[in-house]
Length: 429
Image 1 (spheres, rainbow, N blue to C red):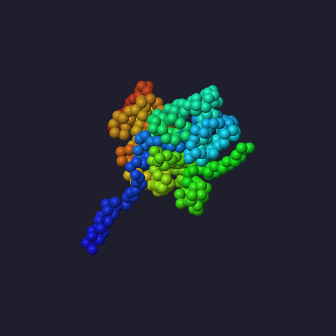
Image 2 (image 1 turned 135 degrees about the horizontal axis):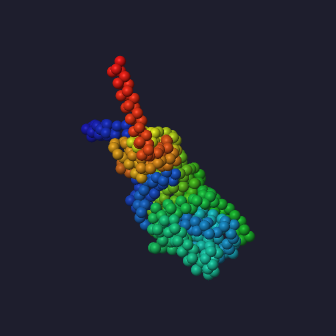
Image 3 (image 1 turned 90 degrees about the vertical axis):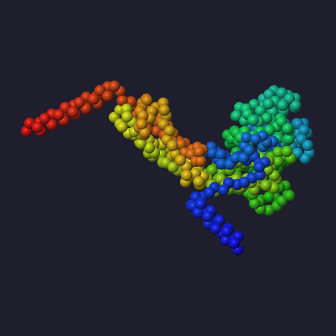
């Protein structure tokens, strides 16, 4: 009874301490997980764990394979499947390509990204190496393609990555980081056809040698389990998430279960990366991340376009002593619940244009036009910046010249003389 009473008192104390503040409850994951969740429109990272550490990417490697193929080939280009598919073991993830069949680059990309075909990866690598590298032997063409993968990674800033194959099967020196993989995912999404491919649940094609039916390995895309599990499970899929739009799975014993996913949910454009998870946990973890983003973050409009945010006091401007400071566009930030209540704002003026002479009073260092950015308004929470926007003067501003000063002096003298004359006339009455 005493223990129960103590628990109640503790609960009441916690309520009192928390007050009305809504505390953001972050999900918790095992320490070995690599996790990165980005809201792309705002550029905000909503969750990160081990994002700078090295991981084996498994078949998420194929994101770069697709990038190199799309950048260097036309979708309609034809590639004949060759002996390169024999490099893949029988128990490997395959698109079941048949030597001698002729497929377009577009078809091969579906075979690469949906069933995660390692054979499709090799065929694309050899085909691009032949066409672009002008290397005719199979080994040389594939090696040339891998060089192109590594070169492209460096080009987009993924400098902590090294590829040794086009498919992601384990190699000790084949690695990446979550931050690098995010750059690759963003690069792939520049291609409209890639966005279409990665969200496709199934794809069929037929040719004289074989008929293919490929299913996407991403459980989040399938309302029912029958297709994606290849008959191992049937019925309703509890992990199906309507707003998920792809992107790529991966799995090896050394890498664990990997997932790069894309989602459009509640005005949020999310890219998530989960590395070194498990078959049993990865889908629930992805859903947990999506729910966290939706429940704890929302876009908030802080100012309307052309709304006044400050009053700028000036001591050397021509014809004006103070001017409203405005934002030109609606100022909308993605904010967490705590951030909305406790964030701080700061206006930072461009020191090349405005010099503070006393508190809240500035001297113009140069003329300022209506279209000229004069500084930024910055928002921070817990010491970290969470957003900023450019600010403008509502009026053109010109530095007062010497002639302007002389003109004002003349006016002051004239006013003084008028005052003295009026004062003298009053005395003589």
